[in-house]
Length: 132
Image 1 (cartoon, rainbow, N blue to C red):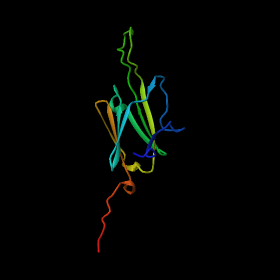
Image 2: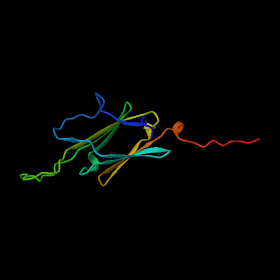
Image 3: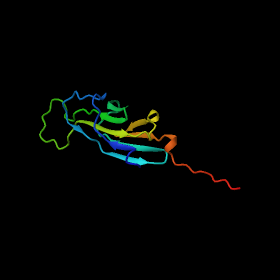
Image 4: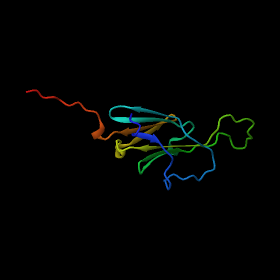
């Protein structure tokens, strides 16, 4: 993968994602794989419901956000809390080598899978050599 294809970034000012809740925010762990046709991102979002995952692409920035509910049952008092809960946020700058109109995503068992197809022009291809 070319470092220019996908790089971590900070959210764009005026981005569609707004911080309205006062909870901790974590950067989820992300694995990125490349094939000749696409990049695949696997994003760990433990404790998140599928309806609470948002993926947004604007001005070359891919943003991933997810909301989680607290783990403490209502009417209880916390005696020990070793696992921090909060929302997730991560963003990446996407180069023009990715066909943004074909980005797709699915969420299952706490893992968001993003497919970022490459534009046809940057895919490697074999050129046939004709002989006379």
